[in-house]
Image (cartoon, rainbow, N blue to C red; front, top):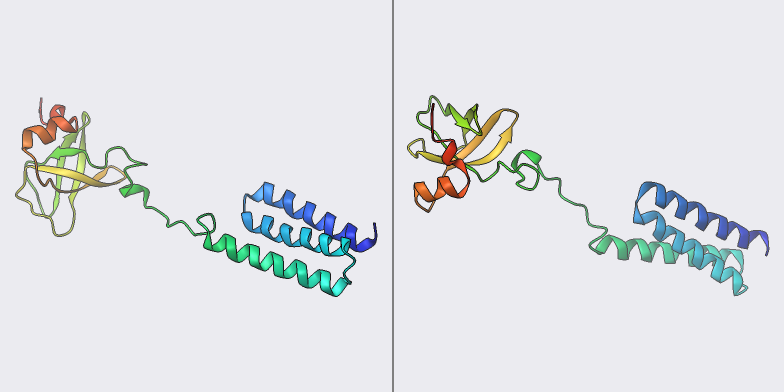
Length: 163
């Protein structure tokens, strides 16, 4: 095997190892280009054609990856509003009185700061947690369903009792 063939194999190997260490598929696509270069070398193509073949295969592979579901950037989700991260999101809490869009309420056996989400009314008794920022619950008026079923549905019936 000549020096060009060894170059392609070593380059592909280094890119595959780097891909395993970083977890990015883009390096794997470029490694496919190197493997196409070694294939062109094996077929007896001159070096300039090997380079063109490797570049084209790598470019096409990267474009295909970019358009696939694996290459799309994932939108960063705010953990304070993600129910998959914070199980309190969607739970119901009672709020007796508001002062300038803020209040205190009992939730899960402790007193919490509560903040009313923008545009929400202060006249509802039950509120649904929309976000958790530190020790502050951001809530919105609970819509639909009866107050009793909503409280027991989310386990908030314990929270409505004040000792």
